[in-house]
Image 1 (tube, rainbow, N blue to C red):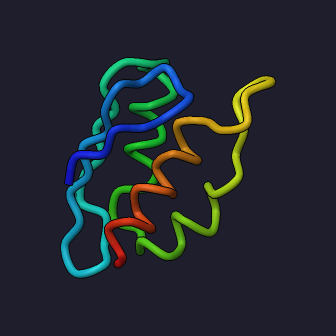
Image 2: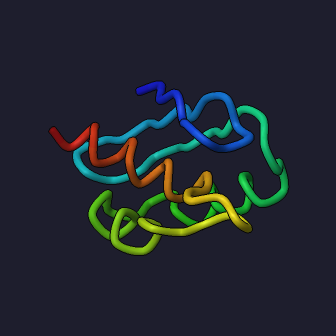
Length: 79
């Protein structure tokens, strides 16, 4: 799945999910160190667990963040 986030620095999030388990996430743009670290941490986790942990995360004064946008993408995938 390719998700176009809103209100953050990254321009695209590529997500690979197999049976409710996150296999791979790639953030295009944004803070590369944080994004690659986050991607490594959530690989192998259940979609629901990632949504629960990341939803509502803010970046500075922004109302959202790349992790929050990932949670929105995963909610969309769930539908």
